[in-house]
Amino acid sequence: MNSTATKEEYILKLYITGMSISSVRAIENIKSICEEHLQGRYTLDIIDIHKFPDTMYENNIIASPTLIKHSPQPFKKLLGDLSDRSKVLGALGIITQ
Image (cartoon, rainbow, N blue to C red; front, side, top):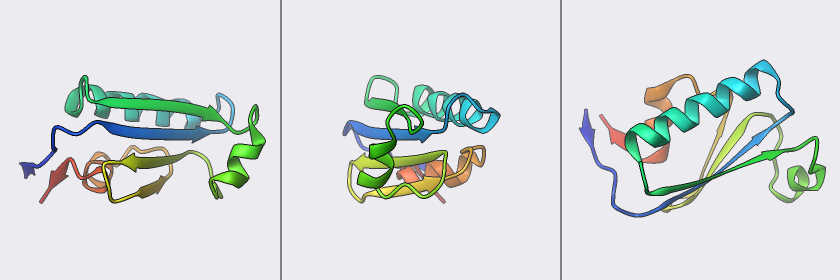
């Protein structure tokens, strides 16, 4: 595997549903990935759709947890607990095979 991460800042939003087991796991997984591969080059917003239900409709969130990569392009949306690190790294454009 080759690292292909650019020096661009990553803008990520993680939509969760309260502090369920899957929400906590998704938060831990994405924070770990960001700190390991994007340290100092990312912004991660965590949005609880229970507290802010309008964001679910505004951003077409159909499941939780959902991670959205706004920048760098291309835009990506990932569903689930983000435990498949290779899938997450590939989708974020950090690692390619």
